[in-house]
Structures are given as C-alpha cells and as structure tokens.
Image (tube, rainbow, N blue to C red):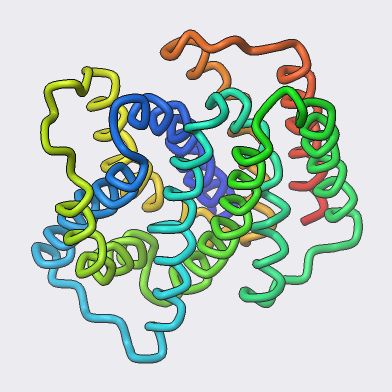
Length: 286
C-alpha cells in the first residue's frame, strides 16, 4: 500500500469511528451530566493511553512539544467533547451532525495556520462550497432548533479543527497514537478529579444506552479513532485528508436514525449529500 492510499485509508477509518461520536454522546447525556461525560471519557481514555505508553516503552515528549500538546488537550480532549455534550442537551444528534460539515474547512484553515500547508485555490472553492451547504441549512432551521445548541456546536467545530491540525503536525514527529495518548495522560490531573467531582451520587437511573454511549466515546472516539485519524492527516496532509469529514454527517445521520430513532429530514439528507459531492473536488486539488 503506497503512502497516499494508506493516508486516505487511515483517514477514512478514523472518520468512520468519529461518525458515531455525536449519537453516542447524545445517548450518554440523556441520563448522565455532560460535565461528567466529558471528564469521564477523557479519564478512561487517558488511563488506557497510559497503559499503552508504559507497555510499549514510548519516550516522553520534548519540552518544545508541550505547547502543541496543550492545544490538543484544549481542542479535542476537553473543548470538543464538552461543547458537544452541552449542545446535545438542546438539539438532536441528527441536527448537530450537519454542523460536522464545517469541520473540514476549520481543520484546513488551522492546517495553514499551524501546519504550514498551502492548498491550491481550487481546493478552497470546493471546501467553501461544502461548508456553504451546511451554513445554508443551519440558517433555515435556526429558529426551529436551539440557538444555544447551535452556537455551542460552532464553538466545538473551531476548537476541534485546531486540535486536529495541531495533533497531525505533532504526529509527524511523535506518531499518531503517541500524540493522543500523551495528550490524554497529561490531562489526567484535570480529568480524574473532575470525574470524581461530577460523578452522580447514584447510577441507578442510568440506562444501558447511556453506558454504551459513554464506553464508545471513551474508547473509540477519544483513543482508537485518533490513532487512525492523526496518522492519516500526517501522511496525506491536514487539508486534503481532512475533507473526509464531509462524509461524517452521512454516516452519523444513519447511526442516529438506526440507534436513537431520531428523525432524519430530507433537508438534512440533501445538505449531507451535497457536501459529500465536494469531497472529490477537494481531494483532487488539495
């Protein structure tokens, strides 16, 4: 398998894993506090990452890597999980998934600012066009949904794009799974006490869907998905492979309808399919 094929394969697997994150988070916050879900998922993944780093005897990051690791923690360990968990108290996962169409352009912009990439002008045409479909949909439905939920999702998209780009740049030196593992481990002094502080007094009211959702976002969304995703971004370019995220709403909407029985409107499907059509163009000219 050549490097390009490997990059897009790893990126696709990572995207596929991430597509279940919002439906799983939605299931978790039905019975669990969003602050607990945010801290617990990072804490569980951090303990697993610590085991991996110790068993495989990985070297510690250099002092110059700490600033990047801090941005990764703020972006994908704390920021994105917290903002989405709060947003999903006000909107459905199906509605939130449409905003994921904005994540590729956010990632690409930070790839330029933080990763030093310079995609061609035609690439930006396709990237902006894909995002325009999403913004158009959000504008037509903003009064039917929650303004608070929409704004929280936009904040999540910004910090996640930063975390993706920063992690991909650092992965070129440390490796993909090492980067996310170190970020999770370094966040344990924050996430472990917060998990204990926000833990509910009783779990008797917590149903099986919430437990499954918490386990999924802890093991797959916070750790396994990043192993493939950061490797794909580092191999194939942050802006280019990042456009695979335009496919994420398509898979996520299907999961939301299948497991959460949420309504998926024709408008959602049309917007998602239009953004998917932009992936080929963006890939070609990245």
